[in-house]
Amino acid sequence: MDCFNYYEITALLKDYIDSFSIIFTLKTSHEDEIDVIYKKIKKRLIKTKVLSIQKICDAIYFAAQYNNRYYNSYWILFKKIFEEFRPTKLDYTTDSILSLEFLISKGADVNAKDTNSKLTPLHIAAKYNCINCTEVLISHGADINAKNDNGKSPLQLSVSFENQRIALNKRNELGETMLHIAVAKKQIGISKLLLLHGADINAKDNQGETAMHIAVRMGEIEIVKLLISNGANIHLKTKGGLTFLHLAADKGDYIMIKFLITHGIDVNVKSDNGETAFHIVARNNIFDGIDLLLSLGADIDAKDIKGNTALHNAIFKNNMRIAKYLIYYGANINAKTAFGTTPLHFAVINTVRNTSEFSRAQEIIELLLSRGAYINEKNEKGITPLHLASRMNDVYTATILIEYGAGINAKDNQGKTPLQYANKHNANEIAKLLILHGAK
Picture 1: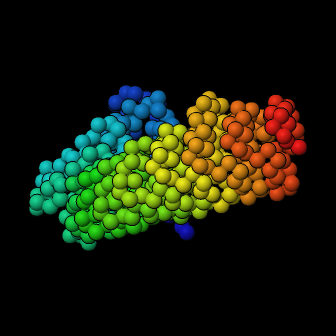
Picture 2: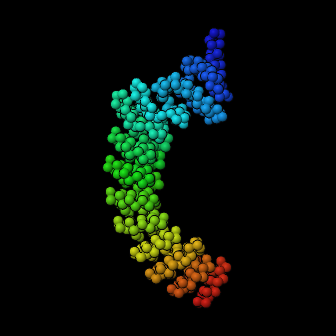
Picture 3: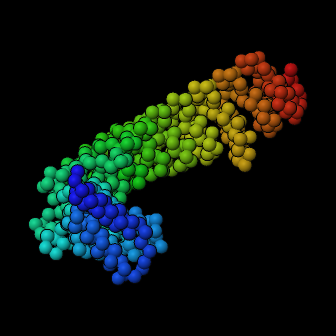
């Protein structure tokens, strides 16, 4: 390399370093001094094409975040660059959102049109496949139906440039397509337009969710109707194995529940853990959901993979109003889980686990017994409800169980009786009660 080239390159590097140093060490609020800085940047970086204007704007954005005392000064500097080098001249192909967000934060009009072409920022982003910029613009109210001088919208411009990925099936880092985003923002008009141009209605994001999952979760019934009418698969599940009906049930969305069932979703469809929507409303204490699902044909005794019924769920969660309702409507009060646990076992446990709801738990115990619950039913370890009451020193519950005929000397799988449980746990009051009734 000759000396001329060496010094030329050295000078260029010095200009580059000095210009960036000016950006990151800016310490003035005077516009005339900012103008001097701008002219140096323009001469050393822009005209030499050492960096694209987009990258320079990004550097200004970053500097403003860390040197925020002079935030307004950076804005003035940014504005000077922006006014001389209009958006159509910026390097949009990098799809950088930093400068864009900086402009919007300072009140830039996202729907501003170029005087001649009538292009909006969204037209430009669509034309150059800038998915990130497109998302930012739409999220800040950019008009997706704005027309350019040829009467084309951003979406139509995108399609005409064969950039359908920008508005249709291109995914962001979360795996979301534009349809996911439009639905999440409750933009039914945009959703219609995307579907009209061929957006994949069943595209899944990184969590295995489609636009339909989002709409159901948000309770957007009109968007759900739109998606179903356009062929959305109503039988898809999330990665967690939940169907649309499970999502609606979890929200207690009665309108959505009824709509989904009347449009083909099985009222008794199960998640990957075997739960139906009926299990969910019972566990979540959604009383009206119980009534609705029963009226639509829900199986009151459906079991999940652990063998829990809705009655098990309601009692375990101490949702006593629902538990009573289920009992009155014929739920199997002796149903066993995979571990042999009956609703009566759960009810006895609840008298201690939920001391603030003691009287309600006792009420359920008496209701179960009056309806014929098997008082001496054993779980997989051979434990009866009286064993549980004895272990927990629950005299009141033990008294009720004994009155209904509980086996005083019933043995678990290890041959232990309720009295032995009481003695082991220093439940002296229970021990006295049991001995009084013939315990050995």
